[in-house]
Length: 248
Image: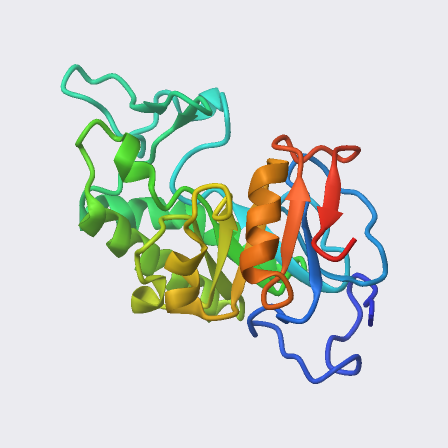
């Protein structure tokens, strides 16, 4: 596999251009809990936007629909969704503030913050961006709906494309993200929940799967092994956590 040094030219290694979807005939790893080394045959790596790209096909994680966990800088922001009492709406599972994407005006205001995050991924040398929490409207206490999510997704995908990045849909089984320009999908536990076909129906082999249980991993490998990249990881995605691939 070709590895590129940070800051090196990207044209001489292969014919891939930045912004192209990830190669499908490769292993991948997702490292949101912290960076780690990968075997030589792992060509695709996803890391947080605050981390450095590794030098293969690099995907940048951006929490585009919610704050990072317990980030109190957002507590008083007018860009956070608020209930009738004026209290911020929080994703209770991850303790993340949900962004207010309920109107075009709010989305424009929020884009001034999130847009530079995405552009920063391109500046740092990433090839693609994964835009997390597309399904935050399901945790919004009815204050957001699918139309809000679709409109915001289209806006952030456009920023990614303008920056030369491929854009990855995260979860939301059954919805056709190609309708707003998503180039590929990053999917959690489609084997565990028998949802893999809901993504391949729209993205074909442009699907990256991560499973957190042995049962889900076995199911995904049986269903899609050899056709799309699949990795088994610990749910915390820790640098020293579990990791395996279908053909191990």
